[in-house]
Length: 396
Image 1: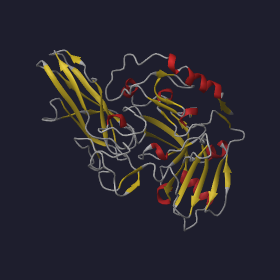
Image 2: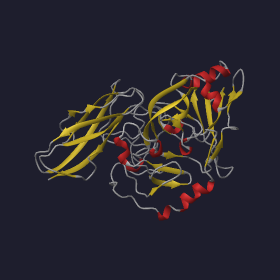
Image 3: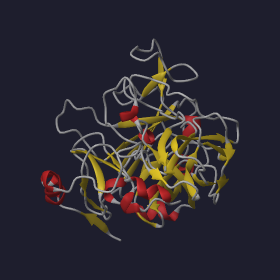
Image 4: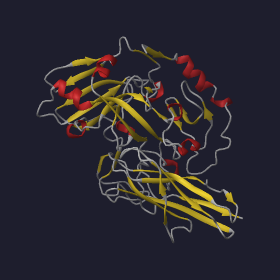
């Protein structure tokens, strides 16, 4: 594949037709469905619209019944308005340099000439579930659809940095992409990782998702993949990798994407933290996919409670499910394990014997014993929601 191009007109045509698209149909308003409309951007199926410029598109709930999220259904999150709509691989390069022994550029052929790494990993927006915070917080009002489980393929970042020769006084590695602000006053999205993190074995520059080239909206031609960490670090349409001798001080590192500097990353609702740190590893989560909020179920007939669970890179040890609001719990059956960065599907058969209202809950625990709080932990940015969610159903 030599290039990928969608005219800006294609994107603007989609954006201008938003007022005419069909409102959400058949998707219950529950933990997953943000209020909005279904839109179809290039290379994508119908996704839930948050904003059109920059595109913020949420994955509808029914795709979370699948172990692997299809490329066309993966959520979209850009931060600044001028996103790449055309990339010619004949001229595209990633510039590598900074506090290094040597500088060079990488073409797609260069990337593919390095040893290839492939694994399945959850990608999740730090604000996934933000619309459920109480009191409400500003920012993209995601339901729980700003996540996906994808098999990524690419080259190890550490192999590239070894070729560059990282100098001993280096502290961070920064990453920039092809997107830009509509005005000079809009800060460019540049993110940085500590050098030790950047040199970990599983950090890759990915050029494939599920065995195919990245979609344009998900970072074509190549993006950073930091498995187990929130997607704010997964810079799309990568253009620059720069080794730094001092910490990066830009808007997108500070004040953006910061969390309270305490073990729960939380503060009392409505207050502000005194000290913050950059957001990093994902928390353990479990979500019920079926039944949906408000479903009416038949009495005496077996139904399957099912969902997904994942952690910040430690795999899932078990998932327990309650049908009585947390009074009693039963262990669910876990599905196929695709590795420590992947989510796992789980299920539990249930035959309700009495009419009435039931509150379903699911709690996951990972291999190092991290689980989920019963109640939502609050912070003013609406990040890292991972409490035990409740799904109310009626039997009879």
